[in-house]
Length: 149
Image (cartoon, rainbow, N blue to C red; front, top):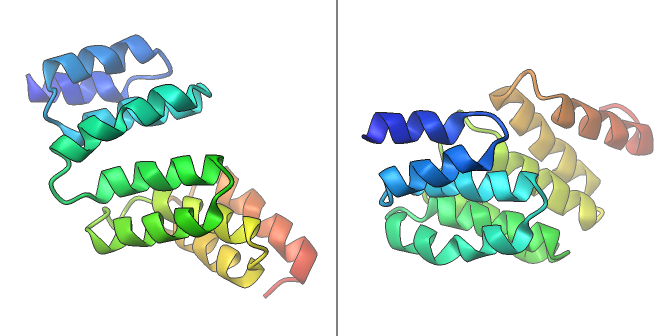
């Protein structure tokens, strides 16, 4: 059941698959996180916010719940909170191969106009996801403002 739920949570843009996955494995923090990020991808921020209590219940390490809180804080234009939550996600064991938290940090630092920190965070995201066009564009945008480094 868990493998099927995991598979369904990773399927394309159809949110129905992720909702089914959550029903199949309601105690998986990863699957709840994937559902919340699909909501975010669809612009359904309040639906993503409603996943927080479940994330808190099932995410024993807290890394995924902190990452979701960082996403939401960034959306709410609260970059200080986004940085705090993202750094906390890293401390709580966010997977080192995943660049999501670093993208959030980059965006939060950019909102704060801390361009060096933003570029460093985007570079960290790019090291984890070398095909990330978003990280490349963000670095290029900062390089245009600051000059290449």
